[in-house]
Each structure stands twice: as structure tokens, then as C-alpha cells.
Length: 494
Image: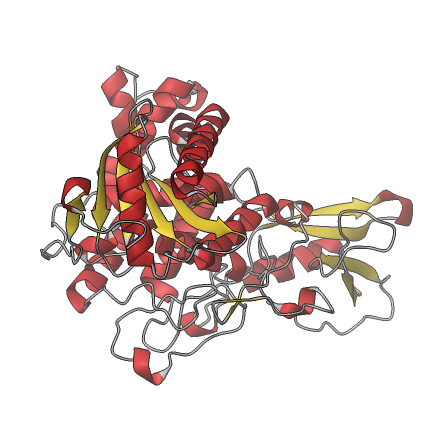
């Protein structure tokens, strides 16, 4: 964390107290949602001199490797005085994650507001709605009853992935994990046999069509819903994925207004730029979400969200092992922590682009969310141009399919998109399509986009982020072997 340098007290000046809000560590004893430790710094100088000192620190030219990640020196701050104690400085609140001389700060405020509103409008238009979630749950329950009747034992279908982790869209696939309760039947000796049996059983389920068994590294059954426009996959005992889903959903609870919006936007941006599909040699949507959470954990001096897997939050923090991996994470939630960072979704997205395009050390470091400390690449990962550690399965690199040309293209996309979102003319060029008098500067300041126009602006921004140069060509990686249910010759009892 950035620390304000010590200031020698002047004997003739009253002491000024500045409180820097800390981090929630445990539930308070009085049962409240959480508490913050106040680290008080006593200084003896007038407020004007103190503010001048902070501004000088903010614009100082320090080498990039010494700058706090994502903050790029001290951010812009707002201060409030304690009227009951003269003019003593009471607290300092972060209002921006950018240096005061950062080019992004020079954007017209109304332009920044409209771009942030465009991101929110995109989320409102494309995020999965509660009604759709309820339909998916009813569909899974009906299928669970059908499979239980077919197999003569209790079957449980757990939904995981984007549908449940808080970053889902209306068009995302539904992922389900099948398990037997309390124990598997005698014939369920491996995932291959179970999935073949599921594919056969779904033939008689009227709401599932185009069902097929996919013989991949993790065998799955893929099908479409006849009454909902969605595709679904069923796997067997995918317990780690279920815990990953719960972890990401827990992070969303810490900032329910910005984090889901950012996640849906980053996924859409990556897809539009051609860098959001792991099967084509880039990164999966899940990997991008991990990168986003890592960035939000590193913001200084007040990170938006904590590292939930750190055992320092809970004194007992007993490990919980699933498939030999510790899946413990902190269940405590305190949304008030993120409110101390008042950056907009646009501030955070532009900082996200600059952090990963210019500041992160891909040569030596690993992107991970298990702890805030720096993690160096293990020897077996030195061959990869970038490394993203899975939160629980820490020996799994989510970016292992990214080669050097694709890695360079990903960073180029980030730099190009950064310039799009710091371009003073991007809003002007969009408004000109609607016949707005863009030459009249005052009219532009008075112009406010409605929700439909903001949604169109979001699509315009995403299109502007697409580079003329296409992603490196790589053959579609499909190591699976699909089989229709009619060709399957494996029965439940065999």
C-alpha cells in the first residue's frame, strides 16, 4: 500500500489527524456487518499545505516498477473536515484510480459519464434476468426427476458456471454437474459410463433435443432445450467447478453494482476482439474474470475487494479439501468496503486495460486471486508467455493454450482499446450519427443519453475496440469425439 511519507511536526501548528480506512478482517463483536481499522497519521501542517503535498506526490515521476499496481501513484482524493474540532482533516476518500496527470483525466466529464452509463446499459440489456434463472432451475429440477426415475436412484444436478457465478448473460450456456445421492450405483464406475447412460436417458426427456455424448478429457452430454433458447452441458461430479462458481459469486456480493457489470463487459469486449475463446488459442471467459478480480484486488491504496482465500480473515480457517485441493474461502461479506473506492466502471475498465497492457510483469509473475502477494512463475510455467492460476486448482494454468503470437495480440488489443476509451472524440463521433450538433460544445455538455442510446453507444465502443489486424490464425481445437445417442452401445447395467 502507498504510504504517505513522514512529516516533521512544527511546534507552532496544531496537529492534523488524517484517518486512512483499512480493510475488514472479521465480524465485529456487536454483530454488525463488519468493521474497519483506522490507521491514524498525525501531521502538523495546514490543510492547504497537506493537499499540496499530496498533489506533489500524485504527479511525481517514479519508475513504473515502483508504482502501486493500477493506482499509478497516489489517486485523486476528496477530503472532509471535522467541524467539531476546528478544521482538522477527518478522512480521505479515493475518487479516482488515476494519476492527476493521466491522459484519461483530461476527458470531458460528460464523456466519461456517458461511457460509464453505456457500460451499465449494456449490462442491463444483456445480463441474465431472475425470471430466466428460475426457468433454468425448473428445467434442471424436471430433468433431475426424470434421470432419477430412469436410474432408479436419487440424482442431483448442480448448476455451475456463468449462470450462477454472477457474470451470466441471457445467451450463456448452462453447465450442470451430475452426482448420485447418497452413493453412486454399482454400474457407475467411471464418468464415461455415466455420461453415456445420461445421453440414452435424455432421449425420452421431451424438453431435451439434439442430445449427444462428447468423449472429451472430461466426458459431457450436450443438448438443447426445446422450450428455452439455450444449450446445456452435463458432466459428472465436477465438484471443483461448483466451488469455483461459489467463490466468484461471493466476490460479486462485495460489490454487487460494479463487479458484475465489469465482468459482463470484459467478457463481451474479449469476445468482440477475438480474444475470448480458449478453443481458438486465446483465453476463456473464466480466465478473464480471474484477471479482473486480480486487478481489483491490487488497486491501491484502497483495494475494492479482498482475497477471500487468505486464511488471515478467519482465525480458524480450517482447510476444506475437494479432490485434494483446498476450496476454503471467506464467507464474510462487507459491501461497504468497496464504497470507499468511488471509481466508476469506466475508471476501472480503463485501469484494467492499462494495468495488463503496460504494467503487469508477465515474464516473472502469475496472475492469481488466492492472495495479494506476488506469486512468481514456477519452473514448469516459464515456457508460457502468460500464466493465470486457477483459484483452487493452483497447478492449472488457465492461459496454457496462449502462444507468443496470441499473447502479443492480446496486449495489442488492450492497448488499442485503451486508446479508444481515452479518445476525446469517440463520443463526438458517435453523437454525429444521431444528428447532434457536435460543433456546439455547450450543447454536448447538456446532452444526456437515454438508455437505448447508451446501449447503442456501448455497441459502438465495442466495435471501435476491434482491431483491423485479425487474431493469429489457429486451427479450432476440438479434441472431443461427439457421438449421437443412437450409436451408443453402452447400457446402464453393462
